[in-house]
Image 1: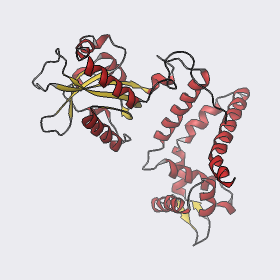
Image 2 (image 1 turned 90 degrees about the horizontal axis):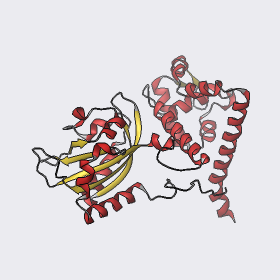
Image 3 (image 1 turned 180 degrees about the vertical axis):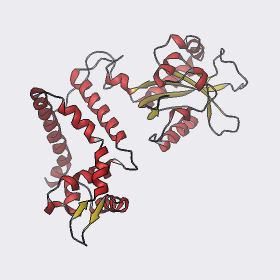
Image 4 (image 1 turned 90 degrees about the vertical axis):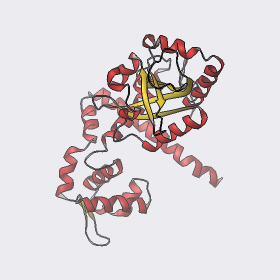
Amino acid sequence: MNQHNPATTGASPSEGTTISHAASVLANVLAEQPSMIDTLFDHGDDLDVPMLVTGSRPNGSGFDILYCNTAFCDMCGYTRDHLVGRSPSILQGPETDRQMARNFVERLHSDGHAGTVLLNYRGDGTPYFAEIMAVCSPRPAGLTGADDDPQVYVAFERSLGDLERGEGISVSRPYRLALLLESVMRRYLQRNYHRGMHPAQWSALRYFKLAASDKRSLSDFAKAHRTTMGTASTTVSTLVGKGYLVKRGFRGPIELTEAGQQVLTDDPLDEVVGSFARLDDEGAAWAERVLLDLAERLADEEEAPENATRH
């Protein structure tokens, strides 16, 4: 596959460093110019970048929010009064990766800086991916309160939706389209986690609904989904246990039950189908060409390492 530089002039994801390295750079800057945090804090509500200041609890059991700027409130949908004094975990929800969040906190404690991307939730329950860069910092002089800890943790965040819309960055149209596709995939996968299901289980139900009668075996399912027999067996067994699939004999076909048919009436894929259905013929043909080309390129990339070992 040809390599293209997605960026035009100006700061962009392809030209920058990782978020973790950016946090390291910011930590070094604050170490050399500790008064900078006072300036940032004093002008926090003038910043376009969401900013959060937290402090460690006396018993070391976590963090409390000490301050957040207007941009942060706008991003997450909570008021400042609702956030200050609460744990940052208020921003987390059912699909937040808790282990990733814990790893982030551990790196922040041990290194004094850390960066990550977490799935957070707005005040209205809407999920969004937040890019977070945090550093240990001297306490801003203007930050008053009962807690007199001389050190605090300052985080700068942004919703990746800002990246998807191309706000604040300069990238080529193909790169922006790729970001939008990534966003669609993330949000689609998020919607697959409902009714006690996960993406692989939804995909299995669709397969056994649509597959020809002579292809409704465990091995055919594993082959079609490019997975191992063990993984396929676990997925099918779970769906049999839920009553959505039934296995006819040891080697017999696997069939969708009436309950499985019913749960598929709430299939998250239907939202994608509906969006494509609204395209006119020209738009649908364009989308098909682009997606087929992308699928073929990704398939080529998957096969390349195997082919390379044969020569």
